[in-house]
Image (cartoon, rainbow, N blue to C red; front, side):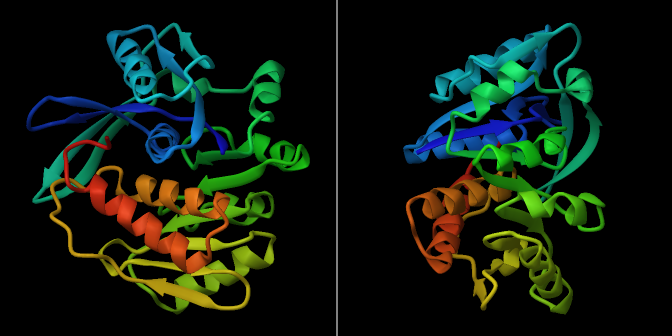
Length: 260
């Protein structure tokens, strides 16, 4: 199982403690998949500051291939995080060098050696997804809670596994998943926070609840759910079993501070 994740990374800086944790959707998904046993690589940019060094070393220590991380003159992306009870609230986001991110021809050639490519809405990798599909890669993309973004329509024909973040199982999210599936997705998935998750495979909906867990910090919960779901799909599991595996993986992540 070979998976490459492409796009944004950031240091999550907790306002109350001042502690900084490596993160970003593609980074987190790569780390979680590595922990599950997949062979992974992360492709992105960091700055020439101390956060860039910390990011590379932390990802490398988790077993992710960091050979395609590029250092660019400037700052590594930073997200300021505030804790409200046990839930995280994102504050100011400084994109740093990632604001100018693009892929070279050599990096695209590197990526197409993998089985599946994953990125997210903030990763600046979406222009390359038609090419990834053309090259035969399985594609996954996290649209987060940006359900009104134009890319929900324009990008989804090139995404096998689109993920969305919403709040509840209602007519709105079900219709969205149906429309996305009709554009070409294999399975469209929505995470619903404390209300579990929902998937649609073109024939039926699969609602799934959440288990009872001790929530310390919800940072990375959605990303670890995505990792679990994708791992299950590449193992040939059913949609229901993939939702369960994603839920179990997310349940572990919320039990500690930071994404991993």
